[in-house]
Length: 179
Image 1 (cartoon, one colour):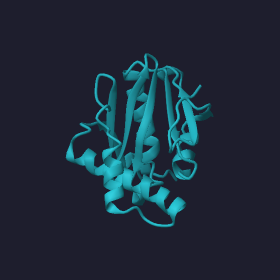
Image 2 (cartoon, rainbow, N blue to C red):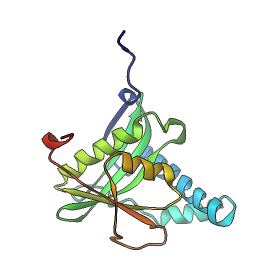
Image 3 (tube, rainbow, N blue to C red):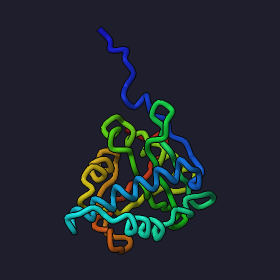
């Protein structure tokens, strides 16, 4: 008997979006609050105060995630915006992945993998053959997602207060994937 029910990832669609749109700003705020509060809980044993979170958000602009040297993606689950990711060009062949977020209630439904597949397409469209990113060690779900989707740990390519581990992915031509 063949299973004809839709795959979980079939409920997801990803497309480029305006990083200044209301949907994008809402997702970016949720992303920032999620990762910042995890940091505050781990290091200070408390949630971040609203003033701290808003100040940190203001100090982490996403305005460079626009053409011609960047892009912003929104993932939709059954039509509603529930995930995002951004790319910014670092050099002629390398882009940096940032702002990767899937709403917690929908983690594990295939949205992260679908988002990263769209990231690969977007990186190629920007002329990149390599994607890099930095993250924190405590963001274990994100780290597992990256490893499942072809990223490997690399030496540090930059420093920062929240950069604890770095990943990279070499992009093969679309017709060579899976070989």
